[in-house]
Image (cartoon, rainbow, N blue to C red; front, side, top):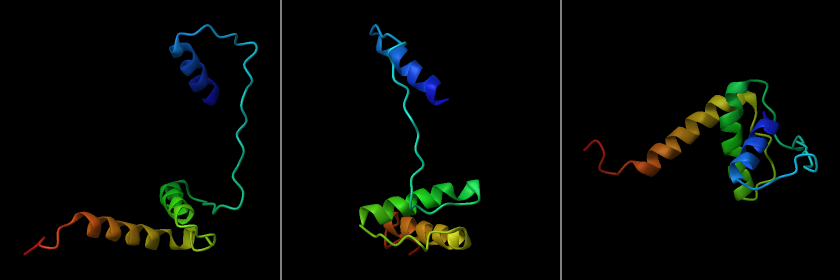
Length: 90
């Protein structure tokens, strides 16, 4: 898939490209990041990892499959509180 997408981008640029000289890229697995055993947890893991990176928090041990549901609940409450006016429901 990655080769297909990169070839489509090259073709759509309209430039003449020598595909023989193209150097394939490599995908490396990130080290030291929390891993999930369940594919449906990848989204919340990504959001929380990005949050930790932006706040310069190095300890990401609380991002795990055991508390993924609680991470979702917390994030949904934060989003709700951020976008809902204080007068909501009055």
